[in-house]
Image (cartoon, rainbow, N blue to C red; front, side, top):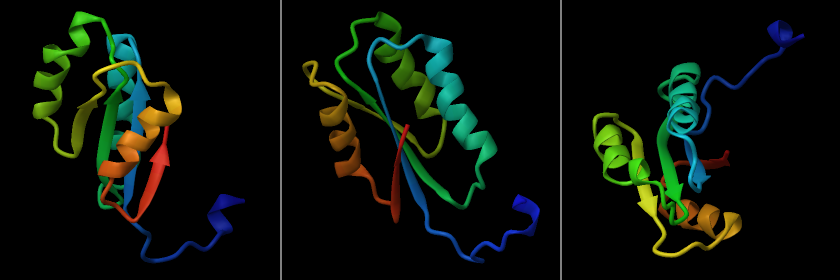
Length: 103
């Protein structure tokens, strides 16, 4: 099982890219808080939320104000709807960690 597995002593840092479009407030917050709460702090370098031109008001300034208070989380916005792959690529371009993980 997992208890018997050997893992590297030093693991690479991770940039987590989370694209979203008109996501529910609690679902979006739960997603990135779960990453922060359940991952070793030293491994998570950043979480990049990529807004694919959402139209819900609370995903604008309210989200920006919320994530300003949280280290390691940033919001990137598309000016027009571009789709999942383009949103992922926008986040990947900004990623600075050793590994990129897409949720």
